[in-house]
Image 1: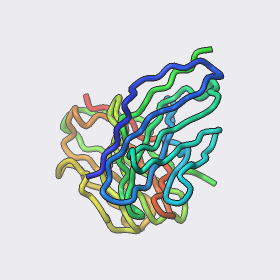
Image 2: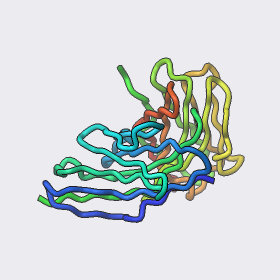
Image 3: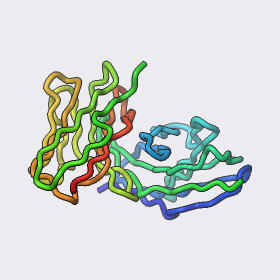
Length: 113
Length: 112
C-alpha cells in the first residue's frame, strides 16, 4: 500500500527566510511524486512533479524539490518565502499512469511579515 | 482555456437525503478522478474513470456512493441516504498525460 507522511502539521517562517517542507513516502515500486498547494477556498494547484531522471526538480513560484530514494523523501524547498506563499501544502504519491494519488495530511504554512 | 469546474460550489442537505455533485473536466481529458477532503485532512481517492468506464472504484466508502460518466466527459457523483459523516469537500480532477491531474475548486457538502 502506498502512503505519504508529512511530519510537520504547521510551520511558521518569516518573509524572506528559506523554507523546507518534509515529505516521506512509502511505495513498492518507482513512485511518481507531487507537491500541490491549496489556498483557502481554492482547488489544488500543482507546484511540481517527479517521474524520473534528475532528482532535483524545479516547479512554479520558485519552488524546488529533491527526490532521495535512499531516504524515501521528497522535500519541498524555497530559498526566500513571500507572504503570498502562505497556504496549505500537500505531498502526494502515485504509481503507474492513471492511477490514484495518495496524499499526505498537509503542512499549513504561515508567513510572518 | 477553462479548467475543471464543479457544481454546485456549496450544497447543504439533510441527513437521509440524496445528492448529486457534478464535474466538468477540461475538454479532451480522458481521465477523471473524484476525491474527498475532510477538514484538516488531505484528499482521499474515491474513483477513477478512463473514458466512460470506472477503472478503479476501490475508494468508494460504501454502496451509498456511486459515480457515472456516461459520455466520457461530465461526471456525476451520487450519494444516497446522506449521513453527517459525508460532510466534506468533494474534489474532481481530470488529466490526459501520465499521472497528470488538474483539480477543480471542489463542492463543499454539508449534511445537517
